[in-house]
Amino acid sequence: MKYRLYYWPRQGRGEQVRLLLHELGQDFEDIHIKPDGEFLTLKKQGAKTLYFKSVPMLQDGDFKLVQGPVIMNYLGRKHGLMSDDLQLAAKTEAIVLGAEDMRMAYFRAFGDSDEAIEKQALFVKDQWKPRWLPSWNELVELNGDKGYFVGSQLTQADIAVWDALDAIIHWIEGADFGDYHRLVRFHESISRRSGIASYLSSRK
Ligand SMILES: N[C@@H](CCC(=O)N[C@@H](CS)C(=O)NCC(=O)O)C(=O)O
Image 1 (spheres, rainbow, N blue to C red):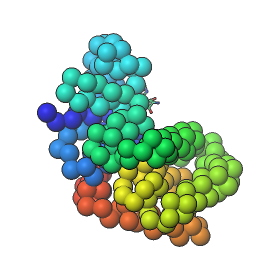
Image 2 (cartoon, rainbow, N blue to C red):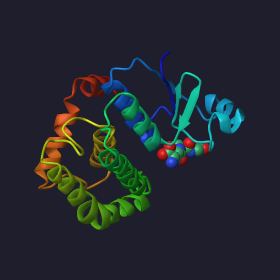
Image 3 (cartoon, rainbow, N blue to C red):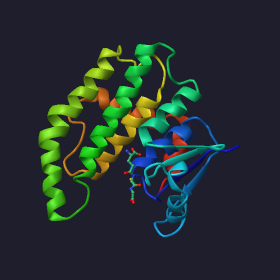
C-alpha cells in the first residue's frame, strides 16, 4: 500500500517528508489538504488520526503518524538510511530536530510585511550567521567532510537540513551561505540527487 502524506499545498513543515519520499523512490499520495476540506474531516476523526490536530500526517497502511521530525526518523529507519549504532542513530535524530529548531526560528520571520522584513534582518544577524551557519558547517566537517551529517551515506538528517537551509536562502532577505563553501557544496550535491532533482524540477 502506498504511503499517504497529508499536508497543505505549500512547502512548510511537510516539504522535508515529500523530499525524503521522492528520494526514497516511493510512489506516495501527496494529499494537499484544504482548511475547510480534508483538514476538517481529519480533525473530526480525533486523536487517532491527527493526534494534536496538526499536519503533516503520514499514513502507512493503518498506521497514522504526526510530527514532521518523527515522520522523517520513522521513514529513515524503515528504509535503512539510519545506522543501527545507538549513538549514530541518536545523532541523526538530533540533527533532524536541529533543522526543526532552525525552521521554527525562520517561520517566525516569514512574510513580506515591514515587520517580517525586520524580523528577517534580526534572524540573519542573531541566528543565521552566529549560530546556524557555523554549526551546520562544523557538523559536516566533523563527519569527515563526506557531504553528509552522519556516516558515509545519506540519512533523513541531510534531507531535513537541506530543506530548512533551502527555504531560508530562498525566503529570508539577506540569508545566504556567505563563505561557507562546504554548505554550498552540500546544498548542491543534495539538489543533484536523482529523486530530489526530479521532484525539484516539477515543484511549483
Ligand atoms: N511539531 C509539529 C507542528 C505541526 C504544526 O503546527 N503544523 C501546522 C501546519 S504547518 C498545523 O497543522 N497547524 C494547525 C492548524 O493550522 O490549525 C510538527 O513538526 O509536525
